[in-house]
Length: 184
Image (cartoon, rainbow, N blue to C red; front, side):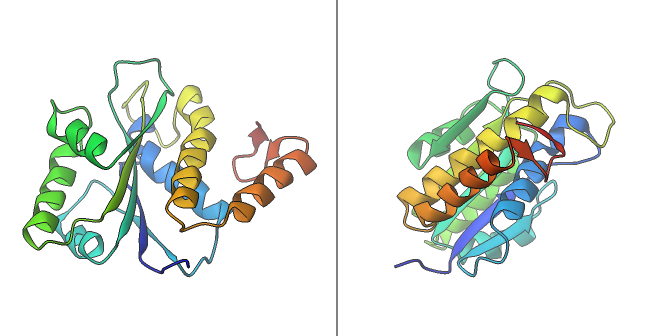
């Protein structure tokens, strides 16, 4: 059974090129899955404590964010559960991790940390002024969405047919992603 308490949270500042990768990934994900009653989409911006209530009210959480992996720009990594916790607890690798870790600490204190939780990070190339991500990060957004879909299918929050239909749309349109306005 699919429950209605899954939060998809995008974090970032869209005025700083790749720093906004989490927001861009959230928007792309939402464009593929509009209006699903079991998912709540939140643009978390650069984080604030007001997001604690959203995190406390969900059982499943996926966070999209730019993250420093010391890898090539556009590298996507998904970390779930304790792996996510370890990443957040290590040296700062994202401008938002201290804030996200603080939000998780609040959820732990209230015994409401989501059981299913994951961070999908995208390695930035640049965080200079600019409203669009760099090419490697733009090209990585579909892979970040794929990671989120796979987790949601695994957690029973998204039907595999919803993912399959999106893949069929890509094939039917010759691999053109109309939400991004470019070839895949």
